[in-house]
Picture (cartoon, helix red, strand yellow):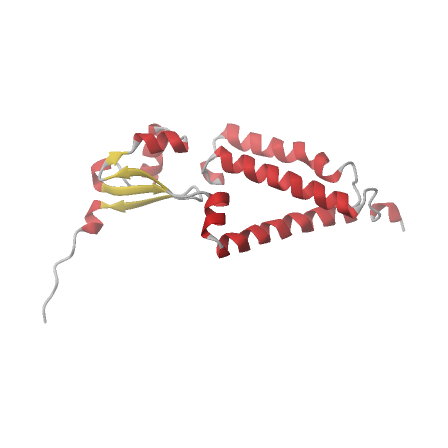
Length: 168
């Protein structure tokens, strides 16, 4: 049996530190990059994400291509992801820091231009997102919120009108 496949050439601690540093850097970079789901990424953003993952591979494994090193790195990344999920669940402040907050983009049929700019969403992109949800006229919208996860939630004005009560 070829044991070189299994024996890491770097100390385990170094692999763990490399994984933590790269994970933290990418998490911050993606957080600064804005609120977009994978399905909302343009081709340039998608290609950049693919290239970044390839670019940081060597910084994580430090040239150690053993199976064990790969398993250690995968374990550290999964553990970090689980820890961030748990911390986000336990702390609203941590969740807001990592995932961001929702942002109001349309209120009472009017676009909140300042918030579009903050979220780096063009008016054209907003209109396309609204059309995908069946909204063709801004006047039909009470509010549209860009959620922290990148999805768009829309409340139609008609849904706010109280339905008449039936007395028995």
